[in-house]
Amino acid sequence: MKKRIFSGVQPSGDLTLGNYLGALRNWAKLQDEYDAIYSIVDLHAITVKQDSKQLHHRTLQNLAMYIASGVDPKKNTFFIQSHVKEHSELSWILTCNSYMGELSRMTQYKDKSQRHGDSIPAGLFIYPVLMAADILLYQADLVPVGDDQSQHVELTRDLAIRFNNAYGETFTIPKTYTSPFGARIYDLQTPTKLMSKSAEAQAGIIFLLDDEKVIRRKIARSVTDNVGLIQYNDEQPGVKNLLNIIALIRDKTTAQVVQELEGKGYKALKDEATDAALSVILPLQKRIYELLADPAELAGIYTSGAERARDIAATTLDDVKQKIGFVL
Ligand code: TRP
Image (cartoon, rainbow, N blue to C red; front, side, top):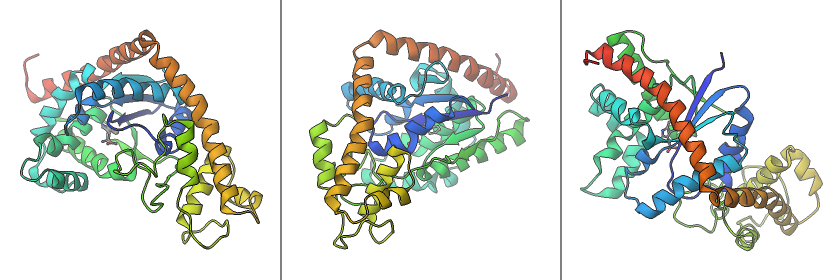
């Protein structure tokens, strides 16, 4: 039996080159080896205020981006979280088995809640429990997430073990999946910070749907240094980041890229990074727009995805309900 992967992505913010190189592209490489289920987690998105029109649009757009990135809907399951009611239900049950203390220790909660003054949405506090429900409903073995989410996967393990101990074997205990192709792309203006779709300033972020002109400009204006040499080291984070982008896209080692650019200036480095970025982004955009222009194709994908997801999720939830004594 193939191991099962589950991951979720929030339809908040537009996806970036960092998301593509760090996640999307790698997911396509996992599809033969694993049974992968991916969810656009709209229930998570509403833990902070969302514009309704944008939420709707981004949910479909994100789905299109995954598919355009080569994650094949025939080999993977894609669905929209709110289409499978079991997530909300299991989330409540797990909430009743979680402690205020452990939830208060979540770093992301501590960070995000600070922005809300006296009106911290309770959903922000429960957020990691909903994430645990996502993962546990599918008996996932592996959860590919960035470092910022690994604490939530730890909590998921704790909740699963607690439930299993109290009620008998129910949930598979998941692990964080660290990709062997892992890539971290940094902000072009602040190359010590990850390129994040939720960052405030956009000049350092390449969005997958940016215009070609905008992409050229952002890379041309990316921050380097005054060393003036193309070398791969931590003292030159801007140069290092551009080298990483080129190497990842061109499927080369950074040493090879450094060698090819030897003796050249930063202009040549930026030109090469631009060519590389556009070589993946332009075809991706073409496919994304094709998909968005054909709502029936997308609907077919998320409808059949939800059916399969619901089958698995309902089996787990029934088992849980029976164990806790609900009358079925
Ligand atoms: N919290 C994750 C993030 O912000 C998204 C997410 C929700 C998720 N549910 C999940 C990731 C389940 C992995 C598994 O990135």
